Length: 259
Ligand SMILES: [Zn+2]
Image (cartoon, rainbow, N blue to C red; front, side, top):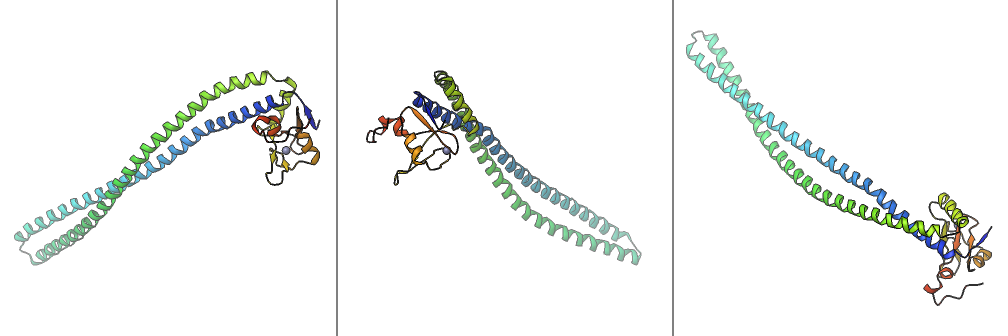
């Protein structure tokens, strides 16, 4: 059980490579809607601050309008009391009217100060409102471009995946069913990786499992160099192979595989 002899080593390695590519693409495709909704959410947040800035500006304008109305009322009061001044004979009534006029003038002064302050505030709020509107517009343009690019990429991946699925199904169908079942079982339990290329340390030449990274024992090192067989990793149970044994044409300088 620790070594699996098969004439289909290369075919199964190829299947694993196809599956790895398909899994990676499927993961990218699945991530696209998540990315799009994150972009949209960030944009909605920005739009909310745009609305808040606009509301703040409108509120200041309403306050200013209110002050101006009160100034007009104060003016009206001053005029009314001045007319009345000419008609009264009683000294106390005259003093009372003068005091009313003084009050109205004082109120008017305060209101005019408020209007000046509000004008400054409105200026600041207008600048902020304009800036945030421009920012939102820019973000919207970028967002549109990004979403379109993401959607196009997702479609391309989806189209490619359909073709890859058919190709994968044909490759799987050509394999020994028992070997395929073993492969699928390990793949299901090992995060999609059933067949792992062993890693060869360039300095020491030591081998480790490409799935779990455990170092290979001397016996496993011999096993994995054999042609027509997978060595089973004692730690993760994945089927291990050596690239240069399975693909000798890719490393012509490598020593020949052991029989
Ligand atoms: Zn392993």
